[in-house]
Image (tube, rainbow, N blue to C red; front, side):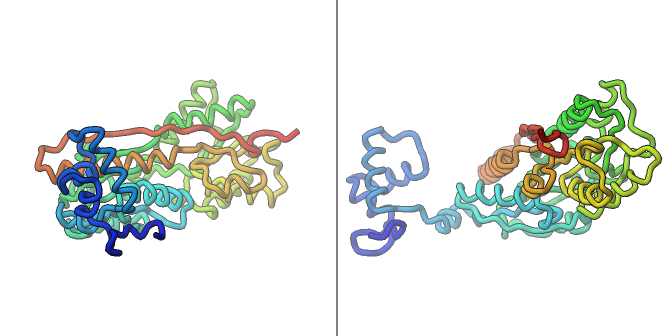
Length: 352
């Protein structure tokens, strides 16, 4: 038999009754084992497990979802799929969802408030069982105004104390670690690229707080004209910001970029201008996208635990979906943080 065919002795896909007959137990007992119920003896569980393996039985996810009133489909909405960070994160969410036999619909909001509002309210409870959203343009008012009862988990910084679970990293601590690294290298004129004072998203604001805290702890101040805001977080934005910094009478000796794409754009301009990295200007990014490992010089960056971020988001969503189906009163919203680490590479480390 070809593995994965899951056939009964009659040649059709194995059913619960086939497993029950082979194991010598009732269909209900097989169902209890398949669904992980604990009130089954060890001997019986072993017999059922052997029968399941012999017949290569796999649960019919569609039938199970139909009985439970669920679709087995969740949605993931991110600002931009061509951002490597979000593409990598989406892959991890799909992997985590696959372990639950879920299908993931991936949508792009372009970071627009209207599109985020449509995603939060327009997918409908009959299409998806839950939503994982990374909001960029939606602030407290927009998120609090959501009326769709579909369970939702937020990624990124929490911008309001609302009814939704939330998973993120500690952006203040991560940014502080990145800038402290530059301080410890002896850099004293540390600039930033990527502040967004008018954005409703809290990510840029919190990374700016971490930057300021690290300088204050070291008895330093931001260099004059050294905090360059950007409208977007693309390579071109980083390149334009770096060009502005180099036009100053006294350029910085280090730059903390609020994501890796900004840092890659900055590195390109430094290369074109003949500025040595890290000898003249050290550069740190944020996100640890794959491109940063292969550029020259390779990029020092903050690495969020993206697999864990995705796993926790799916886990929280699964709990909310189950809770909603049980009719129980919702538990208080949960906020979980994942670890990060500073990965030191050539853009801050002189080569021997």
